[in-house]
Image (cartoon, rainbow, N blue to C red; front, side):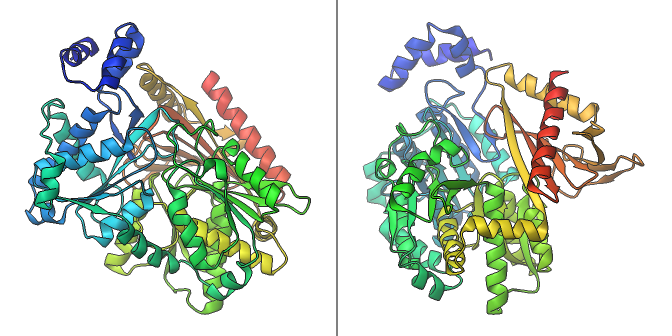
Amino acid sequence: MSWKNNFEIWQQQTDLPSDLQADMQNLAQDDAQAEDAFYQPLSFGTAGMRGIMGAGINRMNIYTVRQATEGLARLMDSLDVTVKERGVAISYDSRHHSAEFALEAAKVLGAHEIKVYLFDALRPTPELSFTVRHLKAYAGIMITASHNPKDYNGYKIYGEDGGQMPPKESDIITESSRQADMFAVPVADESALREKGLLVTIGQDIDDVYLDAIKTVTINPTLTHEIGQDMKLVYTPLHGTGAKIAGPALENAGFKNVTMVAAQKEPDGDFPTVALPNPEDHAALAMAIETASENGADVAIAVDPDADRMGVAVRQPDGTYTLLSGNQIAAVLLNYILTAKADAGTLPENGAVVKSIVSSEFATAIADHYDMATISVLTGFKYIAEQIQHFEDTDEHSFLFGFEESYGYLMKSFTRDKDSIQATVMLAEVAAFYKSQDMTLYDGLQELFAQYGYFDEETKSMTFAGIDGADKMAAIMQDFRTQTPTEFGGVPVVKTEDFDQQTVTTMATGVAEPLSLPKANVLKYWLEDGSWVAVRPSGTEPKIKFYVGTKANTQAAAEAELEAIQKSIADKIAE
């Protein structure tokens, strides 16, 4: 069906909400925007459905939310009746329409006699993951667009293990939802659902048990309660969900001197103080650093609106602040976890670290030093969650730490998604440890570089919006796949991993062997000196991401090689 046909179907609807009616009127005057809004359905990627809010099948609105939820409901209808009794937990963040979308999802599920546990107000994504496990629900829904700009919203579905819904079930949901007429999805009455006990409000009761679980993240409570009395921290939720839980979590751990960035503390879907509410973006920490400078704080912490990602700035002796990358944060967290557990005699013999294939090898070097395994998985925290579940099912390993370079970390498996609440408490403990040694987190990082070598990583993205964007991205991926680079930055490629073809090829021999990881549209190139390059389209945004990781004997050498490799990538794309 053409976009014009889809547009006409929407024009025929007489009961669209006023905001969508206004949007339709605007789209009627702009064919390019109308085509983008109606040419294809909003798709599920590595972290669910995400898009610009507005009218259209390629937009986030009550109808696309209902349709997606109908897909989940039909899946649950096809299973044992007990899954409907176990129900679905739903939470949402501070974005516009998030509360509305959450309630719409609840009413669709209720129409199928599926029990829903709906939070009384916004809560972090990791708490939703925890809630699914705590309530033994069959699934969870989180309404969020994570770190995207204010015009976006999204919809994540979680499985019964608390991890994002695996591909098999996600594909079934997608197929089922597409079969449903989005304007004919049954929606139950909220009051009737509450009377029948099919819609239950949750809130502080879940907060309390989640905060109790967060207490177990702290490894050395004596340290945190002694140093935490005086150590100054600054925290910002970037107008999102983090403050409600992170404040009590830090206080429970012994950190009494925490300042919230006043202008960013309250939830606000306009995100008025930042261009992008993403702790990966250095500009997003500007107000936190300003507040920290005024207070003389040791550390400034920022999390994204749904509080799953965490960024950090560290005070230097001259009073300036240095931002750490996601990979660097992971390294200092992991080193402390392994060191503290080793000192306490609680480091398991079969411990394992799980990271994504596009994350730093810095953590691998640290884990190797402690004879701990490192397992690399595809991008998407659901793959880390799958490994955790595998460990529990087989006792093959004991989970110690999971992370992605995109500022996502997990210490304890009671959550099965990246958890900035856990990460914030652990980061504060690591900072307290170094403070007890008259050092900063930055000093600790430099010690790790001196011990393991200088690692440097950077991710750059190219955006391809609109209808032609997917074709352009496919062409770039095809060029990298068929015209295999032999070097980057003058350093020879020795091995190529193609996760779509599921092969690893040794360049010297041309011999290809099977890869054990699932199929994915990712290419990774290993260089002669241990550096690497990875290329993959984003699963939730119209972008191709280029990841580069280098290692050298000095910081300057690592940075110089990274720059040379990035130039090689740019030159290849420009050919």
